[in-house]
Structures are given as C-alpha cells and as structure tokens.
Amino acid sequence: MITKSQFRDMALSFAGAVQAGHFDVTDFRVKGRIFATWRDKDGRAVLKLAPDQQNLLMETSAAVFSPVAGSWGQKGWTRVALDIADEATLRHAMTLAWQTVAR
Image (cartoon, rainbow, N blue to C red; front, side, top):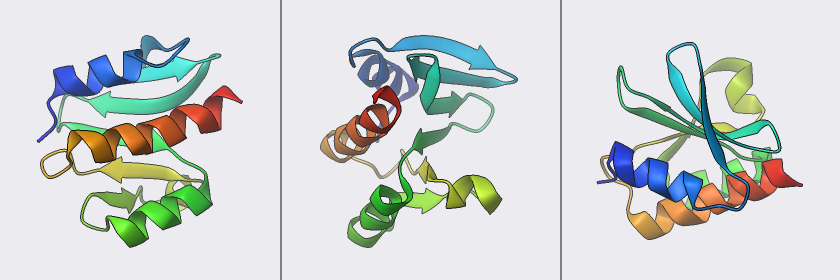
C-alpha cells in the first residue's frame, strides 16, 4: 500500500517537479504540466501516461492501473490502485508519466 506521503515524496523526487493544486486535487507538475494527481476526498491517484504506456501497464498490472472514465482516460490519464500498488511498480509508472510531460 502506498500512502499519500509516499506518493507525494515520490512525485517530488523527479527533477523539476513541484506541488500545486486545482479544485480539490493536489497535483504534481513539471514545466507547468501535470504528471500526477492526488485527491484527499477519496485517496484517488492518477498519472498522465501516453495511451500506449497506459495499455502496456494495464496488460502487465491490470489490478493496479485502469483508465480514468471518458475521454480523459482515452488520452492516457490512468487511475492507480494505491491500496495494492507496490513502490517499484508505482515508481516505474510515475517515471513514465514524468517523462511524458517533461519532454
């Protein structure tokens, strides 16, 4: 299980990452673009992946990753089940999200 604190620390460990927020969501950005979010209300964590990255993660770790509903999910926004995710799997996925946005 990944806690809010672990998620935050991991997100901020990437070069140029900063914490910000919009609406009721804490977000993590690089170069002004969001690569990860956390919502306190329900503990929902989301990563911004390229659609092909999202598909690969869903094939290899379907219980951990699922697309966000609607067009956001089709664009690569991916929900992470932090209650069953391990640190290595999350770090790999978050690295992909950071790379996708930092380019």
